[in-house]
Amino acid sequence: MTHNLQFFLALLTISVTWSLAIFLKETTVQAQVNFFHVLVWQALIWFFWVLLYLIHRKISRLLNKQKSSKKWLLLWAILAVSIHYIWFFTVCQLISPYLGFPHTKYGVYPYFFIFWTLLDIALMAALIMKPKDDEVKSPTTEPQWLSLKRGKQNYVLKPDEINWLSAENYYTKLYTTKGEFLERKPMKYFQKLLPPDMFVRIHRSTMVNIDQICSLEKDRSGGKTIKLADGNVRKISRTQLKRVQKAIAERCIDTID
Image 1: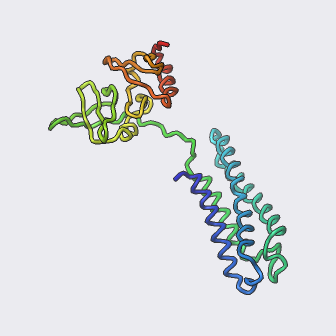
Image 2 (image 1 turned 180 degrees about the horizontal axis):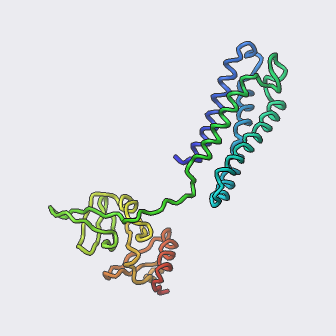
Image 3 (image 1 turned 135 degrees about the horizontal axis):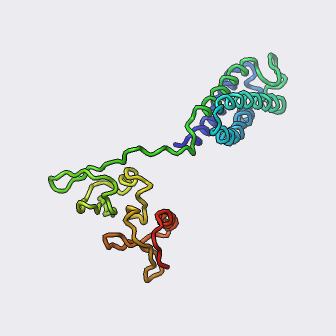
């Protein structure tokens, strides 16, 4: 589950839980208040955080490159909570179902402010401390070695020793500098394991070492194929064509129209 979805589900949970808690606690006026009215009121209050969340994403991206980003993020957090205070009071004065009831002010009971402020701080802390969605993990300095087995013999191969891979039912066949290997693992397993800057998926059933591509050509049906250094010609699916062309362009590989 993505952090975005988690955050929106948290807002939904807060709205429903807090509405139910308020409605059940205020037993003296429960008969005069409609629960749906309470739910709408709380949803309007808490889903204002969707706007604050979108603003936070833009601000955090801008501040990410600055050395004093933590200080500015803290100032933004204080500002965001203050903005929500203004929104809170505005909504409460307009549509709070508890407007005019005894012991209330602006349509809220005093304990609202305590829990509301704590939740505001918790939400902002969650945003500031979360890992950035667009942050790209740096690749490991050492490439992942593969342990493969053929018969009773075990082999350890570096990624650049693998020429291409082919999916065969529940197996994956690897064509390498040390021969062919048949592994009882799906293609997705190797796609996650092998360096993405070295291998490209060209078809649902085929992944190739970019350095093994000799040329990109047209087949008789008008589709695209690639010719590999070992002489094999493999078809490129339409969904993967742009990705393959980009990889080829970066490697300055010849193409034939």
